[in-house]
Image (cartoon, rainbow, N blue to C red; front, side, top):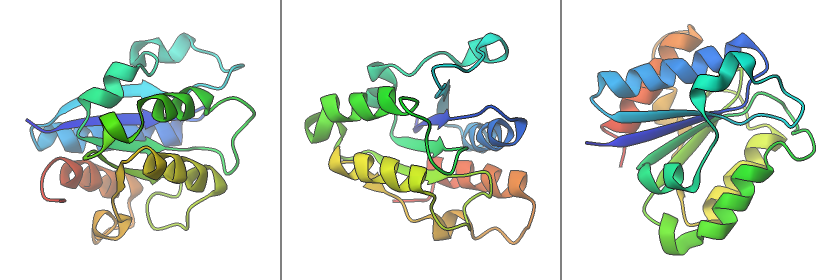
Amino acid sequence: MPTVLVLFQSDTELTEQLALAVAVGAVEAEAGIRLRRLASPDAAEIAHRGYGQLQEADLLWADTIAIGLERHTPRPGELDPLLQQLSQLGPAKLTGKRAWTFNPAGLAASPSPSQTLIEAALEFAGITLLPTTPLAAANTTDLTTQMNLAGHLSATTLP
């Protein structure tokens, strides 16, 4: 069974909604999923407790990692837990995994500085970045539908 880890940074409903659409698409493709929220140090956790915090075991478990980054540029420290775990695990444990990022505009938008930072860290850790062009190929302007299809493709047809 393929496994998909969906990480998302969200203080608004849109990015969370897109992350959930990715997860639903992966489940529809019969993948195992884990949802984790990347919270800024000052973010309220009450509404998001069910997602849990990113653990090393999550990164080791996943075949594919989808990361939704809400802010154009990250707040100080908010991406540090992910960056530190990627650095600590490195290519010895993460090679062969694949990942892609998205932002509130979905997949068609050009990468934000936050995405560029995370994508560089993913590659440095030995993770293969998936091109988002096939993921964004859905013939729809509805972001939720597009992200659902991307989740499905992440669990099935992509190399």
